[in-house]
Image 1 (cartoon, helix red, strand yellow):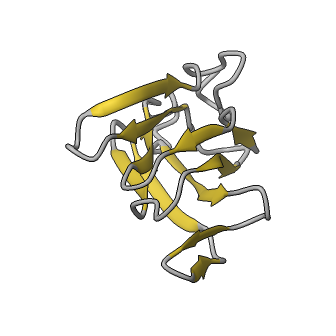
Image 2 (cartoon, rainbow, N blue to C red):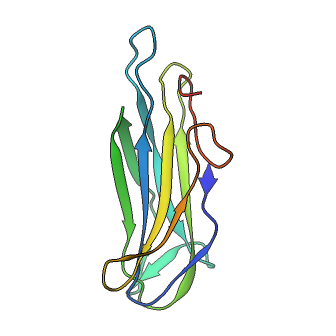
Length: 131
C-alpha cells in the first residue's frame, strides 16, 4: 500500500490519481500486468460528496504501458483528502507502477501535481520483474 501526503481539495476542485504500468514482458515472455485499487479518504475515513460516501475502492488492471485515471468527484466543501493505492502483486508477473496525484481547480487546470516516485523509487511501486 502506498499513499500520497494529505492535500486540501477546495470547493469545486477535483482530485485524481493517475497510475501507469511501465514494465515490459519478462525474458520468459510473461506479459506485464499491474492490478490493484485506488481509494480516497478524508479525516473521517471516507470521502463524502453530496452526502453519499464512497465506500469501495476503484479497481484497475494495467497492461504494459497502460495508464488509468481515478477521479474523486468535485468537492462540495474544502477538506483534506488522502489518496491511497493498494497494489496486488504476483511473484511471476512483471509490474512497475508509476503514479501521480493531481488537484484540478474549478477551471480544470492542474493546481497541484504530486509524483509518487518511479519504479522502485522511495515512494513508488515495483513488482516482480519491474525491479
